[in-house]
Image (cartoon, rainbow, N blue to C red; front, side, top):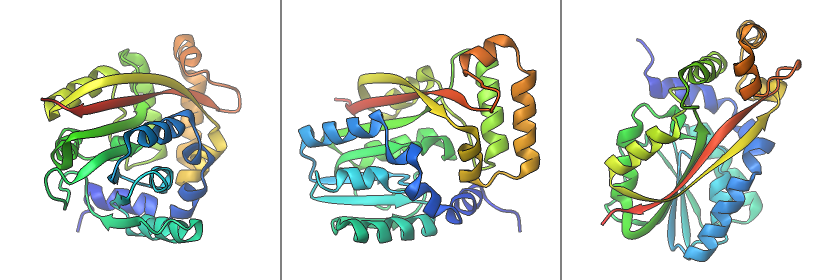
Length: 255
């Protein structure tokens, strides 16, 4: 029986749950601090961490919200989040298993929906955002954060290629223009878009996903062969380290 995309995602991340809980890239960052700031000002009652991964958004929201639901496709990842929440003394975090394209929640049941570094794994990002809009209250707030693809085709192709070689569960990093179109179509009104640069250290980036040495070597080979403008944009180094764009979108339900 052939694997579904959802099985590929769960398989990729289930065995590496502990690494994502402790990952410095995921546990820290200006975007995570912004989530804390916004959540603190918004005074959310019930919050949803959509595609929670290692649970870092849930951990950030828990002291600021009444209840937090950590939602993910990987049962092993949710087990790790549940264990870490207990260790951190955060009893208001609950975990729920499932795909983002079909959320098991009532309409207008969350004050805040947040998703960080998850959407590039979703089978259908348009449907996932529609579901996020459906479960968000009319006066609610949404925050979406992810790696952003460049608008230039050459740069976009390079990024998507190395992402897929590293991780077969990768679907697509979306450009800012794509994010705007998806969110508007899903019924969101965009309030603010923030772009940042995120440095990535090659060895830990590969190790975190358990990329086989043969595919890691192909990625390094691509680095060496790319044109100067690609190398410059991604700030490629001899060690293989590079820098990507990230996007943070703050949105509310459109009226």
